[in-house]
Amino acid sequence: MQQASPQLKRGLSARHIRFMALGSAIGTGLFYGSAEAIKMAGPAVLLAYIIGGAAVFMVMRALGEMAVHHPVTGSFGSYAGHYLGPLAGFITGWTYTFEMVIVCLADVTAFGFYMGLWFPEVPRWIWVLSIVLFIGALNLCHVKVFGEMEFWLSLLKVSAIIAMILAGAGIILFGLGGHFEATGISNLWMHDGLMPHGIGGVIAALAMVMFAFGGIEIIGITASEAEDPAKVIPKAINSVPVRILLFYVLTIFVLLAIYPWNQIGEHGSPFVEIFKSLGVNSAANILNVIVITAAISAINSDIFGAGRMMFGMAQEGYAPKSFMRLAGNGVPWMTVLVMAIALLCGVVLNYLIPEKVFVLIASIATFATVWVWLMILLSQFAMRRKMTPEESKALKFPVPMWPIAPMITIAFMAFIIAILGYFPDSRNALLAGAVWMALLVAAYHLWVKKNLALMSKKEQ
Image (tube, rainbow, N blue to C red; front, side):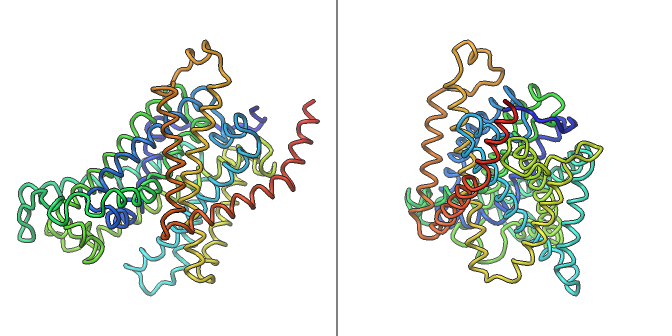
């Protein structure tokens, strides 16, 4: 796992990295995806978020151990290639990149819809084009400028979520205005109990819950551009998963206490109701600002993550060498350009292909998220197995409860993939994921394997 000559510049502080992870992981999964999880599990969805959050924390600790021990641009793609073999590295890196393209595609398309609330006469493609160009230009700036922008975008989004939690807590305890009396928390069990669909409902919701946490792994990708990886990465990993878990659990707890779980998604957004209860007549406009901020923040982080992953893959020989081209400020401009073109082409396809086909393609993102996490866990496990006891003791940020906790988390991730295949609604995600893996394996053997062999001969 050797670093190639072009090097990215370090400019991301702990503050930047923490909020980049928040910006990537808190978005549509909370504002919209949570409604589907609630329908599956009822109030017991809180248990699914707690279990899923604990598993994600272990994934991040495994990634953190490797990132502090050896910070590289390709992050978990490079680690998979080094510890599990080049095929695993190739599949992991491109699966993560494709996941980011799909998520960005959904977000830029949603941005066009959001702007339509204020400017219904403006064609949607203009807004989509403008946001792609704006975020692309932002990612071409020095990494510190990018980090600062992401910090403020995520701060606004997090502040809005905190406002929702506080407003909801006020409704639960005291009631607010003439819209609500104090609701208490009896809604959590009044409608067919805490677990209305049994343990099966909680299991079904786990796939949606795990997808909602997707994006937090960007912390590992930032390691090569962090100002002090050994200090910054552990702080970010220890704090961000806990914060995200609290945001999800507290927000959904408030919603479930205020609204009967079986009415969520049927009578308008519960988020709108919270703002209305405060006597704010322009609740739709306020929510629009929040979701637009969430979309821009997520697009920003995801383009950064995919671009840096492609740069790292080029160093390893898994992607074209042109992806290693850097601007004068140390930014990989070619990968940013590739992402922008992919988004523009994807938006066009989104208008041309039938909706069901698009949903099928987008479902790969669910599979890809869990696949990447599983590869992170397996890579860390393989790294430890190759270390001597002395080397393991010298690790600056070791995984807790080794090896029991990582083994349990690996089994849990495999279980989530099995869930995708068991339930009819998510079976397409597993089928699409299998097709994607087959295409990558074919691409590896047809093109990449030969290039890696040539690179090895040149090094000798």
